[in-house]
Length: 542
Image 1 (cartoon, rainbow, N blue to C red):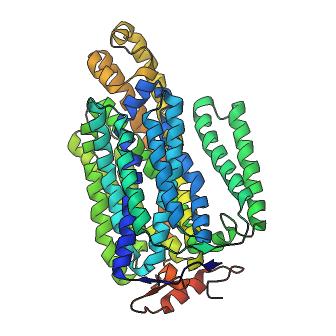
Image 2 (cartoon, rainbow, N blue to C red):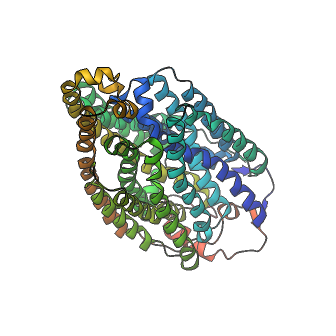
Image 3 (cartoon, rainbow, N blue to C red):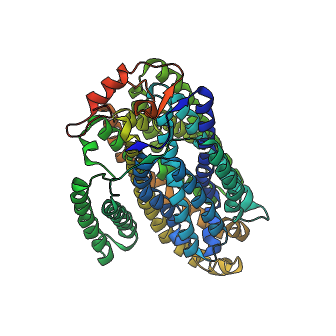
């Protein structure tokens, strides 16, 4: 593999310009992950899909997960600039499709296409930062991106709530992405100066297909198992498909010249623990966040906009901890202590959230989500940093994508299981509530649970409103208990995370694609690379 251009000079100005281009793309993806949360009850009610609500989130996360390894590997082989622009374009076009969706099925399809772009934006931005910034300094750059996601956790629901409550309608949750996407593409086109690479190795098409089959079967098995029954014919067929696809994937990857997910990565103890930790936290983190605004709207009678405001404390918690720890990591190179503390705090927050009820005060809810955010800020960047730091610089993309892939698998499974449990319990409780108030429900235009919207429930008044609120409260809050064992496992994994010296040389510099204005010592990088590379995979310098 050779570079097509002479080495770049990584001046501070160039690094900041590239970083600005990444932020522009990430802003769009980060907002879209949360903008649907507060508008979801209205969207699924308008499109007739309340009982399939979980698919709005699952489709996006599933698509994101499927393409992560592909973006990571292709970026390592051919360069990341063109891929980043393609991801922005996909995301923007899919936003138009979602806004124009005529029914629930098409809406879910376009959400999946958005995920194809969002997965690239997420992986490529992290890999590019690793290319231009040494691991020892990386926390300072990853912290603003973490804060960006934290801000989007509030701005997204607020924007979604505003559009939903206004005359504009929920469609503008997606129209707003179009000008942002065009601007992000323009910034990336002119500012994202990265080397291209030439590669003659065959693409691992068989590995990509097998991995896609593994992921799809696993997610659909989880979703159908919870709704149709774990012994239903389709559920068992998907379980068999998962086992077969997984076996095929392992066989294919062992023989591939450039595997999409190199199996030798999992002989690396630091990478393996960091990746397993990301999977466990993903299971708990996204499940807790995905349906909380829906709960607040229905069980507390809040508007979409106000329920979005209640997530502000979570963002404050994320920003406080992620920014507060970045400087310490840069000075000392220590990051494990924050990872352990972060999981413990998330676990405490989820246990606390099991006490949610219709009469829980807004102050208490704010304290709950602040605690959750503080835990997320301590951990979500550090597991990626640990994984990137444990592999040779030639494998930064695939290490980043594999680590994120398993986190997104956890998130997808968590949302699917959590959403299935929630919607199943909700359907069981809503049916008698509507039947007991059939005349009032018909007068409010609520003909079935699938046509339920917060506005219709609020307009119906008592006693129907009280019955629906009770159904939501009784369906959601106890489901948080299912996350507790997962987070306990994550805490144990954090204790076993091996803390190794952070590299002092950027990925592009280590690969000979760039030079710095002032040479930095490479000794620490050499120690990290040779200490962590498993037998059978040479380092960049061998």
